Image (cartoon, rainbow, N blue to C red; front, side):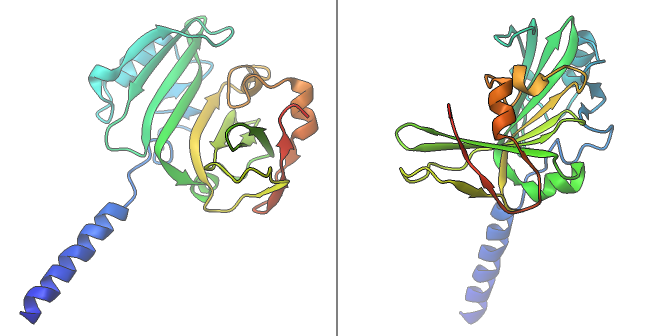
Amino acid sequence: MRRIIIIMQFILLLSMAASCSRAPSVVLEDNTCNAPCWRTIEVGKTSQAEVLDVIAKMPDIQEDSIQQEKTFLPMMEDAVYWKFKGTAELNADISFHDHTAVMITFNFSRPVRLQDFIQKFGEPSSVYITSSQGPGVYLTVNLIFPNKGICLFHQPKLLPSQNPKEYAITPATQINDVYYIDPTFQNGQLKIGCLRGLEADEFSTGVQEWAGYKKYVVKKQGK
């Protein structure tokens, strides 16, 4: 009887370990080229036809999920969307201007720790944190690598009704979305990326220099 209990405990531990294991990330585990290039798709250079050919051959993409559509983003004509299978990322899309890839966006179903992205990309240059009032408080955190064309987006769960004045960024901060944009596309993150809809002067008054893991000031939206 004791042996059966031990075996059952061992099986339970194995199942718990499996459930806690991390799904592979197509962003973090891509070593084909340096970001904002992904799996040979280089923003600012790769044509729309080449993109479609490349993603159609990827085994971790749901083949029947690939869709081409018109996009609402300014200056972008088309976009291609797809879903992943068995990865930390749920889906992704690529936006095109003049039939050339300009932006790649990855949305995560299983958020990945900030420290894993910093290990791959290095440290961001700046941080922009804003809060807005709704049924609760919505906080958005953007970590920006302007020279690399990368932005990491984090949105914590709803906070208490009192707007926080500061927010702590830690190694365990969970990244929800990643934006790759052609670095030569002027103000790309403001126009179509993680800071879309934000005015340049509003961004300039709220952006903070990255100074490592610590508390950063939260800017109230519209102020």
